Length: 68
Image (cartoon, rainbow, N blue to C red; front, top):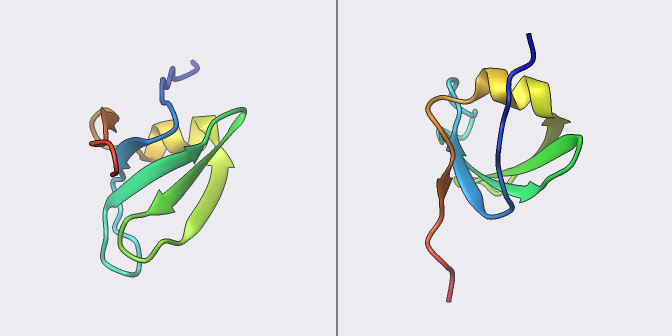
């Protein structure tokens, strides 16, 4: 069964496992068949298939406040 994941560029997500830098929060920077996310702790960028991200996400995506 496919997991439906609705995200847009700029959304924030919380993953189940901690990143080695200690952060759980990631920001969506690319959307398509693959989704690009950037760690909020160390700015590392990762690209993964949409289905993998849907499995690793904890909770639901939320909109980030606009950056000035």
